[in-house]
Image (tube, one colour):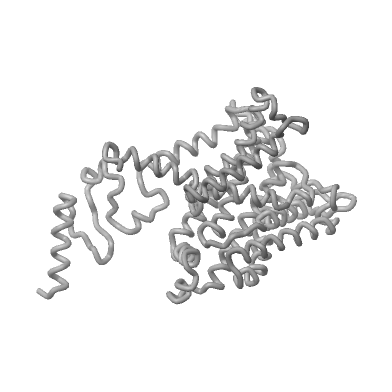
Length: 407
């Protein structure tokens, strides 16, 4: 028996002792079977690389995914209309946040121009799916055509801009994307047939999907599906699909290339990673996600104006990924809920704290307080916990998993 065969047999013997009933474990091929009795109570026991890298790789994750999905689907039928609006806004922010996380969190390319691509998606949807006006264009197409187009056109623009952005990095890249945002805001103001012009705006895409009018109320048995619930469910389906697509992409070779470029681009290039292709792909994907989010955002608010796609909107999405957690899909979902729901909680403070008002007149209004809170949280999370709220959750979970040896 040669040395390689002897080592293989020793590894098989070790595996048999560890699992109790492992049979013909193939270390070279990464396959093998471990009985259910041995795996019970050991959710972190993986017997293959595929199982370790699965999207929902533990029973606990699968259980909570199903529970949260059921709650999310049932939510619009159980809560008030204004809360449904906030939930829909959170879902839209989550889609846009996932796109920004692909670029900034996974690939390490700082961008302040996310609002520009949101605007591109919104106006693509408005032109293709909206009704024509006296001064604006509109084709009145179905959302089945409009939403893919709202992803493709910003994605192509991102593909065109990416080679310029890949020549710089860090602070220079942030300034470049800020310039792109300023240029885009100016173009939105002067392209009246598309945007309606400065201070006027235009209507948005009609809510017609596969011929069904989503702006009507439907009765499915005892369940009443309102227009707000229809739009929320449409956004939720897109969030689940795009979230899984992003997570699936990041666990493969493209995700590893993104991480290598983020951590050290020179070392990544030495190892064979094509920097231009990797950064261009990150920009295109991020722009496409932003386009879909912009289209849904426009349909949610009902009317859009060129002034909306500004730096403050980009900072909101930056807050989503910084507060929620850089380079995590789960953190993006948490951050989106936090950024959207906190202003509502701050509004509630106006009833108990007299110097906080909804409009001007007090020491602080809600918008000013929201800006201060987000600014302070961004500083704190960047300096103390770069993985955001998701990182805090991981710390708490690991503490109780290791208790009473949590040190």
